[in-house]
Image 1 (cartoon, one colour):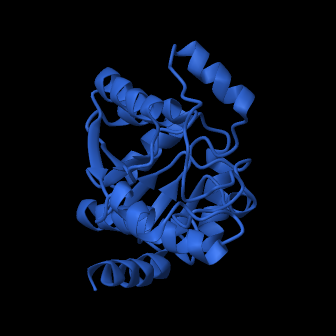
Image 2 (image 1 turned 180 degrees about the vertical axis):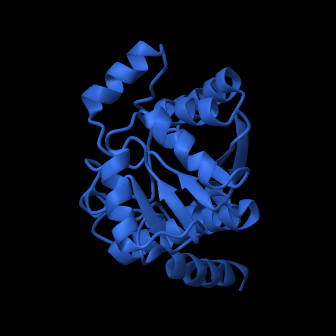
Length: 232
């Protein structure tokens, strides 16, 4: 992972905030040639980060966890973007299907069951994501994180060090508003997808764990426990 001191990061983020998203992505890719990835879930506005990423590196690996709960519109959107951009899509699935999980453990937990949601997220989302990160072994991880998404993300910045995955995390759209992203999609004639559903959140302001400190240990522990009970 490229190394930066806390002071370096402060200065770097101040500098990059004056750059365009495409300039930021190109900078990110240059930090670790051949070792950068972009992650996606094909939620609203994801076309923007994918459009930026493939301009910087046409064959950049695109990590996607297909947890099995996506709606038809999301799968159609994903396929349309894959074809349009020629995405080097790397799909990772949970070790148990959505139908199998629901049959054994019941419906997706609600926001009233925080521990249940964390366990669900660990098995259906975090474990396959960690598996993908381990196999792809990126030094630079490009994301579509934005400051406005939830309180946890408001404390991040364009560039941060992700200790969960040992990568430099770069979010070129971090300070973009929905209005600015709408304008970007319109300018480049890119589609959007509003029927997206994230079963691991249940609430848009909730953190699923990918970008939180508890995510790594939760993924390992809960995946082992749930899969073990499924086999017993």
